[in-house]
Image 1: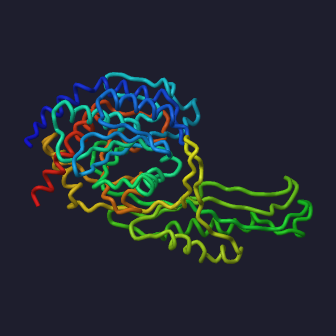
Image 2: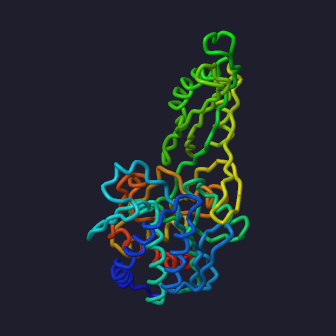
Image 3: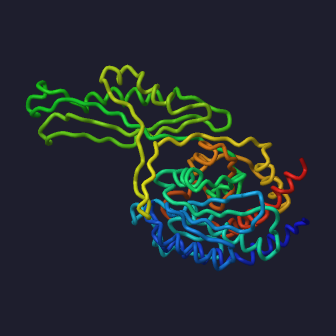
Length: 404
């Protein structure tokens, strides 16, 4: 098949207003994790409008739109949930009513990551318009609960729905660069216990909060010694929460726990990360319990699909077919070499490639620094650029395979 890349770009530009309206409609619907139903239904309406061959919603609440009936299954993914809005006084515009001018769209989810969804859906329209169907099936997924538990949606899609694409394009924000990996992460709990007594005579008890103090100091030191990687960067940890139990403010605390956000670089495992903490002298002295959190919050459909809060690192080699296809499509569309990089944050790739080894590659509109920020914005030019890429990728992938 001969592909006219200029026509793809022209079509993507033609649909800029439609993509912008669709994105603003999604932004206007609050859709925090486990409350995505209304935005999923809005996406379903748009998929049907532009001509997807089949649109379905699975028992977890993910929406799956199919186009074509070819042998190669190429998936593109955007999560549909957002974080909350935080302190409204930090916003210059209503986070759901948003703001739009000729260049940008502002609102919660504009970058993270409903912009990717808008571009994916209209890439399907471009494929239909230009007759770019070939021996592939395009699967566009709008997934749920990513902000709560990244990758859980794809655990369900792969394990329960038995869907295993040849590769997946994650449309998380990349500033329209190609991202081929990310650090992993895990959520760790450290617990100390004590004995309560009246606060006027603390020597009668055993203060669980005091036991946690030396642990916090050693964790700070451990953070500096974590493994580094030339591509993904350094592993990190931060104490993100602290809790206590006590009979009253006038009593010695009988329990204390902390949460640790641990980012895992290439080569680090969850077993190693737990053991590093267990071997700290302060942890052993306090007889603290170190464990991994579990996630079991119900989806908006009511489905509970529990998992450990462990999200593996992953890296796609630059000479892998999917990465080559994206680089070549970018060069043909925009007549320049793409920037190939990695994400700082975590994506559904932790399951797609981290758990299951399905090649995953990133390309998305919007910038990482806009994620979870007040006045979150994306750029209309990037919606266009991403839509053109998504329309060109499947045919280019087949072309790359045909060269071998």
